Length: 121
Image 1 (tube, helix red, strand yellow):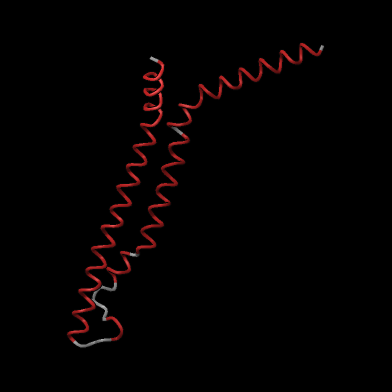
Image 2 (cartoon, one colour):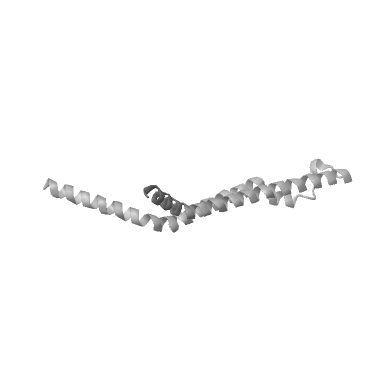
């Protein structure tokens, strides 16, 4: 009786493990990929919120520190304009990094298989 349970458990373990190994590529390129892209999108959206480029654009003509004279308005405009440019460049950098990570996610299993084949040959 004991050997039948052990054999049954062993077969079940082997079949389950093989099933997970065969299902992994399907998960990686479907559900896993969509979850990863969702997390990347949330990360990028948080960076856009932290950089607040739209807030700077909205307030570009509002004088800083209540300086309503011409020089105060000019300095405020120039400072905000530079801030908008720098923050947009940073946000674009994060967008590029997110796209690189997504591409890396898609290519990683292929690279691992190729590296394994090279190491075995």
